[in-house]
Length: 145
Ligand SMILES: [Zn+2]
Ligand SMILES: [Zn+2]
Image (cartoon, rainbow, N blue to C red; front, side, top):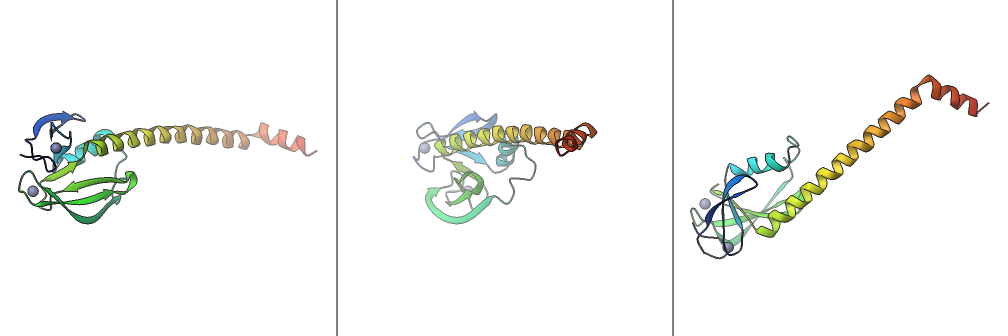
């Protein structure tokens, strides 16, 4: 299997705990077809949220599938503005090294933001609950007396 970019032999590797094939030259990653789902689950388990975020603009690239040499098609992962390529014969996905790194960083950031949001919502919930309590009501009444 050759790298679609550099045409050097891909080597088996483990990335995100997944068996993938990487290029020793450009560090790009070839994910065989089923493995995208595992990658998603691994780093970003928000159920079906990610579905519908793929944009198939289907621009043909000059890169060739390592398996069947068909021209890879480019698509976009909307949420992360990530460019990925796939084999039209469903052999797999090509992900450039900097895209992989960037998306992972974005996912971590989003996870962090989500946790902060949950904390914020929790605090807001407690405040509302507190506002509904008789003691808060009575104090509020006292203010307007
Ligand atoms: Zn390469
Ligand atoms: Zn192919």
